[in-house]
Amino acid sequence: MTRRAAAGLLLALAAAPAAAQTEFAGTWRGAYVCAQGNTAVALTIEPRKDGSVSALFHFEAAPDNPDVPMGCFEMQGRAGDTSGAIALRPVRWLRRPANYVMVGLDGAISADGGRIQGVVRGPGCTAFRVERSAGPPGGEACRAGAPLLSLR
Image 1 (tube, helix red, strand yellow):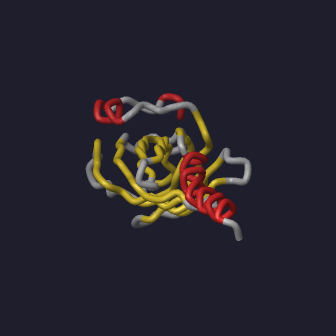
Image 2 (cartoon, rainbow, N blue to C red; image 1 turned 90 degrees about the vertical axis):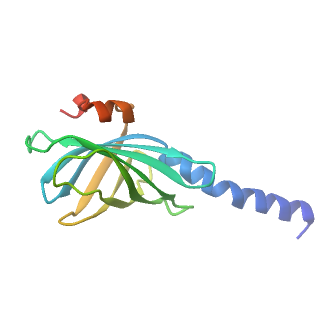
């Protein structure tokens, strides 16, 4: 292998994680299921310079489960190389409802890049599914208790 070809291969391999992060970047809306039942969620994912991703997990009542309180927390994790996988772990609460715990997410992006689905890592939790969407309220809106009106 020539030096030029080897250098090109190294550049391509180094760019793969950045490309994987970029495919997850943006806002995703949908639902997840934990002990409280079906819950609406907006997940905002941002790539970081160190190769990881950060996220805001913003949840509230779903139309079929109106008693769920609003809350949000920060997450961080990894967006998979060429596998399309993502793993997010909770970091800290921005707005915590009484008796709620933060959860983790392990999922994969769909082939068309429009959906992420997978498992929720937490007590009494099962699955989540979100679709690419316009931006939700940011961290400040969550702290202030702003609802995710577009989810209703």
